[in-house]
Image (cartoon, rainbow, N blue to C red; front, side, top):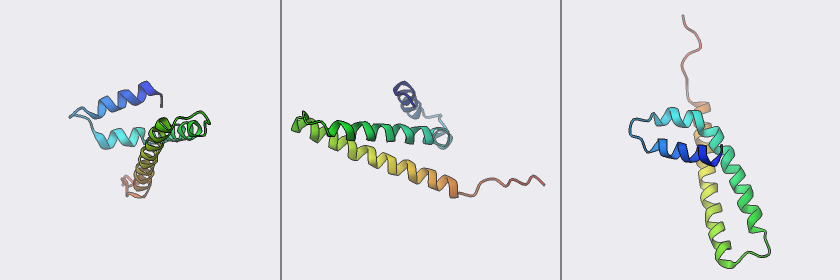
Length: 91
């Protein structure tokens, strides 16, 4: 998921007529992948020896938030996989 796609999704979530369950069902896997990339990039940035204490604190806070969002995505996916869906039988 690119930054423009993420921003478009966030804008869509603010619409009152949006089917939020359908939105997350369609986008949760891409959102999770984007979080993994962001966590990796943030963790890599924290390894920089030139990091100021202020930026280190900022990035550590962002990393904690990203991990929380990842846990949300994992729980959503797990719930979706275990939720009973419509029967495959049509007769």
